[in-house]
Amino acid sequence: MDIREILGDAGDAGDAGGPGGADGVADAAGLISARRFRELGVGADQLARLVREGTLQRVHRGLYLPRERWKGLRAGARHRIRVLAASEAARGRLTFSHHSAAALFGLPFVDARLDAVHTHDPGATGGTARSGITVHRSRVAAATESIDGARVTSLARTLVDVATTSSFLTSVVMLDHALRESLARSCGPPRSGPWRWSLTKSSLREELDVVNPRRGGRLARRAIEFADPRSGSPGESLSRVRMHELGFVIPELQVRFPNARGTYFDVDFWWEEPRIIGEFDGRGKYERPNGPDARAPGDIVWDEKLREDELRATAHASFARWPWSVAFAAPVFHRFLAERGVPRAHR
Image (tube, rainbow, N blue to C red; front, side, top):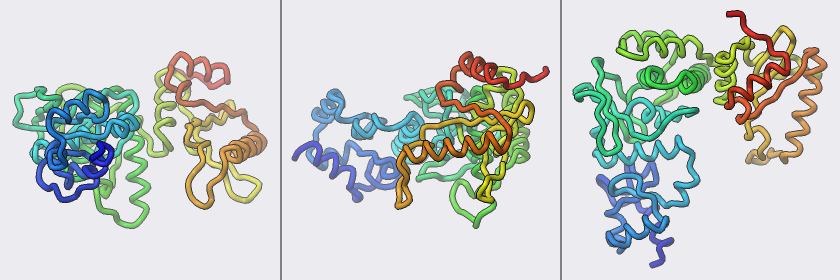
């Protein structure tokens, strides 16, 4: 049998069962177990050769993914699969925390290190690492939930743990996203799953007080206070953090301006004085969407131009747009904002 057929058969199998099988946690990640390969006639030597040749990616002991699929994943998605593989190998005995829990919650990562799988164990000797897994001890046991068959610390605890151990930027991007999603979902019908809670700044402050970490508490509290559910995307959160770090006035977020059609335009950032509209331009804004109402990229760009022209006239404002590359590079973003007259904060 051709190896491509084997990979297809292994990935589609649903009857392997048990740890390392194609169901449960492993199935959620699309992982293929060594046992399943053996059932399809691929021995240990051939399996090792497929890894060396780059056909397979070894994700965890005894668990693999087609290399082409692995290469197409972003860092956060790769980490999620590593976490699910570790859960499968441990037969569900691990509780994932910090960045690893965040990956299962689907939180965005910006400027985050994802080099180890993080677990929570109140009984551990503290800060230990084994087989690519970092074990965190805590004086306070964490509430847990299940996502894709893996046990994780609660959303509030996950965010607090990340905020006490990560950069201000990493924390704020996650906090903004979690607060925005929780607010949006609280306004709709009841939902099950990991986003069913009503996460607020108050609940995050309470969780931080309960955890009372030995280190990182002040940094976490600062990130929680700075977080804002009005931030519309990770790129907008990154931009706001950079503005703060560089000493510029933090603008109003998601401000509405009426348009000629009797509706309104939302803008990402608004400086009342000196009347500047700011917009973060992620690439996704200009890519062709799916579905029957899909528009060509050129039409999207033209509509954006018309929108900008109308906003300039309606708000009597200047306009500033920037992409990821500008917002991420602090010196570049500083020059960009200064050249466009964004006011400095008085500190």
